[in-house]
Structures are given as structure tokens and as C-alpha cells.
Image (cartoon, rainbow, N blue to C red; front, side):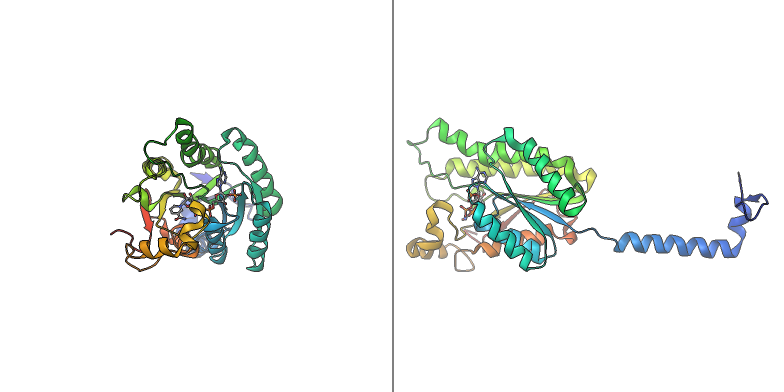
Length: 295
Ligand SMILES: NC(=O)c1ccc[n+]([C@@H]2O[C@H](COP(=O)([O-])OP(=O)(O)OC[C@H]3O[C@@H](n4cnc5c(N)ncnc54)[C@H](OP(=O)(O)O)[C@@H]3O)[C@@H](O)[C@H]2O)c1
């Protein structure tokens, strides 16, 4: 095969001839090495979306991800002021953040949410993809047998399953290669807690199964999908009893190997670890962050 030489050289040159030229080989190897080094070292700024990150576990996850070097898209449903203060806290860490409204019980709004997110991405970061999605938002559902009504089951599934699945589907085309999706399950999907959490736990169990299937579907894009399963953690969840009620806390502490109810920051740290670039070989897993609850 013959290639035209440069205009400066004027003469025709064969590929074989150039490969046999020792100076060409050295220059070629040097160029290839430097391209590989730049591929290995050129990293873009990672951007994480954390749903329900205006307070509780989501807030801690957003801050832990920011501490690990990611910029953050915070979402809130009602807590706009809290979201603004999380954005300020992330800025104080030297990272960029924006806050967007999102209601997981309204899948009809997800396309508009993605459009807003993309416009923030291009405006703030000059790109149109994100790297990490943490599906965290959710609320306790307490419905003991005998008091379960169909609407309460639908409401629980709407937020914890339908919302998570449809939002992730809408976001999936905008997640960069080698991205991370972290869904939120619960210790209650592994062990049976107090009566009344059957519907909530079943919804979380559904998300664990979905996590494994999604991990397979997204593996060709090197996107990992895992579920984090917090144990009892002191937040507003369930009316705040896990944070504020000393009787409940000490009763639960007896069932936790580490001897106490978790803090939101315990879950934040675990999520930042799962989201790290070192975790590219871990996918389709349920990772419990419960301090060893009901082992
Ligand atoms: N705390 C625990 O012991 C525990 C244990 C296992 C699993 N989890 C799970 O961990 C996640 C976070 O819980 P948490 O303890 O941090 O609860 P939390 O303190 O009550 O915070 C809940 C967050 O979710 C948002 N949210 C609730 N419903 C929403 C909806 N329909 N659409 C969008 N956002 C919504 C809230 O937003 P607004 O404030 O704006 O309304 C808030 O940011 C949940 O998925 C929960 O099921 C918690």
C-alpha cells in the first residue's frame, strides 16, 4: 500500500519503508505512549445526581460525594430552602452544585426534569452527561395487616418502584460511560423488622431485583448498578423516631453488631465508596450499610 508523502518531501514513500526507518519507529512509539498516558490521566469532572438530597441520608450522600471530588445535582420535593443550604455547603467544599425540583410520584414530569437537568449541565459544566445517579428519595410507609388499603400500596410503589424505574430510564441515555447507579433498598428487605413494614420492605425488595437486571443491561456501557441497603439510621424517616426516641434507639442498638443506630453520614460514606472509580468491577450487588444489623 502506497501513501502520498508530505508536500515538503515531494517524493513518494512506502509504509513499509517508513516502518523500517528506526526514527519513525521511535517517534511512533513515543506518540502512542503519550496518547495512552493522556488517556489514562485525562479525567473529566465527575457529576452526581442525588435524589432527595435536601435532608437526611441524601444530604449526607451529596456531601460525601462532594468531599470525594464530585460536583452535585441536588434534588428536593418540598425542601427548597434546605436544598439551597446543601448547595452552599457543597460550594464551601470547593465543588459546584445546583438544586432542582423533583417529585418521584409524578413520572409525567420526568422528561421536563431531564430537560432542565441537561440545560443546567450545559450551562454550568459545559457537558450533557452525568456520571453518578443515587436514587435515594423515599419515605417510610407503615401499614400493618388489617389497615393496608390499596391506595397506600400504590403510593408506596409509586415512589419506591415506579418513580425510581421511570426516572432511571429517563436518565440512562445521559449517564456517561463507566458511570454509577446506586439504588436505595433497606435492611428490611433482608430481615423482618417490626410489624407494619411489609409493603415498604416489599417495594425495597423489588428494587433489589431490578438492580440486578439493570446491571446486566448497562454493563456494555461499563455502568455499574448496585443497591445500598441502609439499616436503622437516625433521620426524619418514620417521624424521626430512629434519631429522637431513646427507647427505640437502645432497643435497636441491641440488634446491631456495632452497638448503635447509624448516622446519615455512615450511609453517605458508604455511597461515596461504591460510587468511586475503583469500584468498576462491582455490579448487580446489594451492599448493606447497617453496622451489622440482625446478622
Ligand atoms: N432512615 C432509615 O432508617 C432508612 C433505612 C433504610 C432505608 N432508608 C431509605 O433511605 C432513603 C432516604 O431516607 P431518609 O432516612 O433520609 O429519609 P428523610 O430524612 O425523611 O428524607 C427523605 C428525602 O426524600 C425526599 N422525598 C420523599 N418523598 C419524595 C418524593 N415523592 N419525591 C421526591 N423526593 C421525595 C424528601 O424530600 P423533601 O424533604 O423535599 O420532601 C427528602 O429529601 C429512603 O429511600 C428510605 O426509604 C432509610
